[in-house]
Amino acid sequence: QVQVVESGGGLVQAGGSLRLSCTASGLTFDRAAMGWFRQAPGKEREGVSCIGRIGDTNYADSVKGRFTISRDNAKNTMYLQMSSLEPEDTAMYYCAARATISTDCALTRPWYTDWGQGTQVTVSS
Image (cartoon, rainbow, N blue to C red):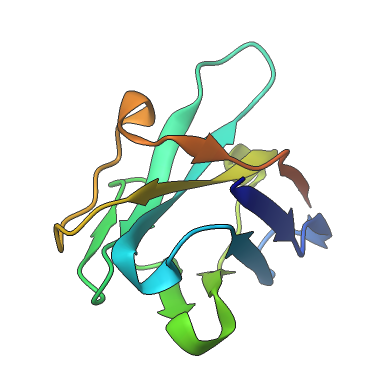
């Protein structure tokens, strides 16, 4: 059974930084694509960033230049370093996983098979 667990959310002032972590178990981590999604109240869940199993990355336009995704396959962990945070970044952030031999990843929600419970990020103005 695959388990995906996020951590690292919190309250931060605009312009500040946070690092989210996501640990996945029950799958072969270095054969999984991983993604970060977020959902603000009243809005659809949207893709933020993803990373393929050997490090290829994609970012939503809204976070390019501010967020950096990375992974440590030895620790079964993915990270999202968020800088220059804006109030518009306030949302529940979800980690997603998909076992795949492809080196690609996608920012589309249905592509992923396993999800965490989310970690809240709140950016105050």
